[in-house]
Amino acid sequence: MEAVRGRATRGDGPFTRRASDLLGKITGASQVLLTTSCTHALEMSAILLDLQAGDEVIMPSFTFMSTANAYALRGAVPVFVDCRPDTLNVDERMIEAAITDRTRAVVVVHYAGIACAMKEIDELCERYGLALIEDNAHGLGGFYRDRPLGSFGRMAAQSFHETKNVQCGEGGALLLNDVGLASRAEIIREKGTDRSRFFRGQVDKYRWVDIGSSYLPSDVLAAQLTSQLEDFDAIQLRRHAGWSAYHEGLAEWSASNGVLRPVVPDGCEHPAHLYYLLLPDLGNRQEFIRHLAARGVQAAFHYQPLHSAPAGLRFGRVAPGGCPVTEEIADRLVRLPLFADLDEAGVARVIDAVQAYEVI
Image (cartoon, rainbow, N blue to C red; front, side, top):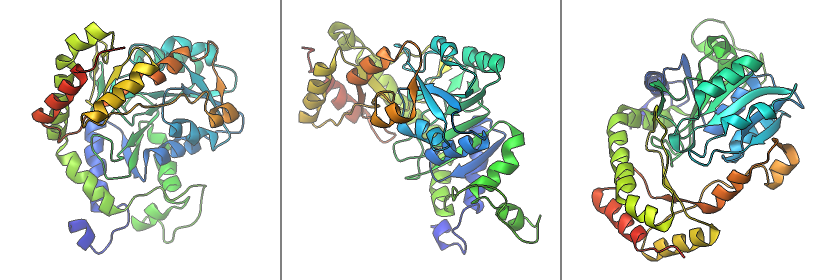
């Protein structure tokens, strides 16, 4: 209500600054710019890379379409790499074969908030002089070898969509770990103008100085986000309780039914963003979802492969080796309900419903 009653509800108000400060502390980013969505944060990263038509950007096929759209909009070619069968993250062993003389960047997505193999990927990017970008939509609060996710890439994009651990309905942020990008990023976010410098008294009028768009969210949205970021530790504690209850409660059932649970490699700390199961095949996946629905439990599948989507075929290309694991995983994955207000009774009800299913 404080934000609504305030005299100015535009972006870059007191709550925008407060939310940005809190995000900086959580992620270790040099600078945080709130955006209207994670999609827009990714679009800003593409502009900041100065991508030209025909440039290539390597990314997983198993991700949300915004990961590819942001770069295709600049005329770049998304190059789709398969995922690992354990973490469902981009397979770091297949990235090098996808690199050509047109490759400009590698975009990693920390699926379910479980870190990609950042050591190997970072070293590969250094060796080939490629920009490393993190699509950290799932990863806020996650760590890789005691380092926060979102702090590895030259830039990282966050999501505060209503499905995320902290949310403001629709929102995002661009994390800058390269301070040399900060000044231009601020201009791009403010419609290509130096308006932010004007409000700080650094120029006597603001002008159009670069390309950009309206990527700045209202301070009202930032206020909602601020309240959740201030409660971040408590939110995470509740989500981890649900995630751990699923993992322990379904261990025996999954083993006896040939169902796979999430894998968290050594050195990775996940943020309990989502909990998924991998059924043996598509038929069982569909029947399992119907089984849960009949018991009042809403479960859903997730990403469909980008490399074989109509737009993926039109704008991108597939890396050598194809994406067979991605195609298989997309047919088998089911997400169970997981949110901060899911209490012990709710978790127990979901576990009971899952355990009542027998794989065909």
